[in-house]
Image (cartoon, rainbow, N blue to C red; front, side):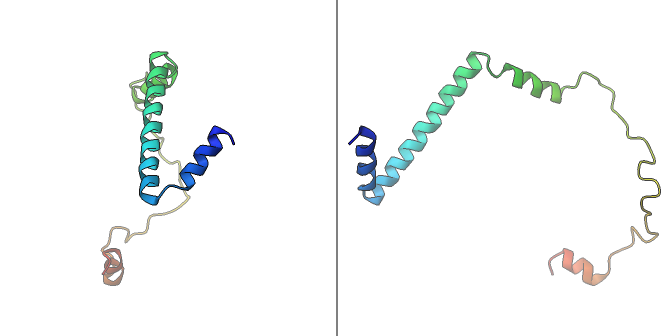
Length: 98
């Protein structure tokens, strides 16, 4: 029986409270190792390209706002004359969850 098989058998025989403790310990260990790997990747510059891409999205090189041209949906639909009229009481109640 290999070490891994022995560990698996031991885990299967644990009482539920000890299994929960083991599960929590493994989660913390996994998160710690993930953090260490992430910190190492940052130190090695492996995430620099992703960071630069994110910064570029937040700070576009062009400061001009691209305006949408008028009439993109011309004749696609019409706004009814009563568009901004108050809703009927039954519909308003439904929206308000009454």
